[in-house]
Image (cartoon, rainbow, N blue to C red; front, side):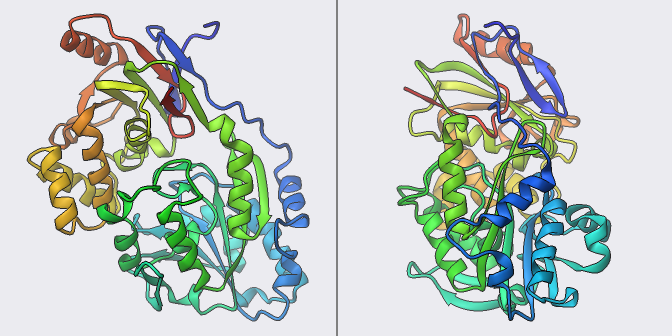
Length: 425
């Protein structure tokens, strides 16, 4: 290795010279001028008419954007979307912007202004869509029986648009597409049904899988019951700028970006490692709920790159501890209250685990076979009750693994474990 192995830990980087192998971040170069990138995407929509044509005649348009848990150039995208809507003669007072919180914490007025852009928030109403607090419309059920409860204001708009980011996702295969509305703006009943342990344990529900994925299929069925007909999705580079962008039909946009970037996101290693040091960049490093995704990507791969009883060392500063939202808090409580991973898995199939309980369930699946440790947490005392070890350094975490193994551990460093999915041969 010519480059000293390193991993993200929030906004910082930790060197891992001890690593035997290194997976650097996907070298996704920024696409250049962000405004020009958005303009080109809007001018050349995928499998859909241009927005200024599609929106003509609409009196009300609802635009869903991600919350702060998923970095997205929403302000730039919204500026150009609003220009398209003006061309369609949609008045500003007919447009609303919905921050898709799902079951994450609600946002403040200032936070919403940052997410949408100060100039846009000054003239367009920006509201939260949050599964526990937002009034939702009952749109029926999917063929599989999932209730479709969606933010009423968005559901009753003449046209809905979603803005989002395409990246690997443990349940949906990839984020983006319809997910910003079907989950981000969904009510608790919809989120509970789609995230129930029985549902996410179905064959085909896996990171990187779109075709034949029951989770993705349910989301698209939910979206079909709403006025969602257009999307702008981005792929983000290591520097937090868009690397690629596409607009048009939500499913077609998601599929095109996922197909084009898959080779950058998925890496295969020839044999399993004893320790995988997983780097987590901000804002995914802000809380354990988000950062723990990396451990599930590694541990629940069809062919894990981690040896049995191996350890995933999650490098994240976790300034918000377990997380502030109802789902994040309950996830930690469910993990802490479990007698063992096996106990939690039994309960998850037969009892409701509440908001965020599905993440506790999938972490229990990982903990049944592997170990999880955290390096870099500001206040690590909450981790031990969750069954997660905390260390001051990567070296200390590796030393603990070697003490348990009674030999030298083989170590893999994954610089950005949220956007690099490693699997065995």
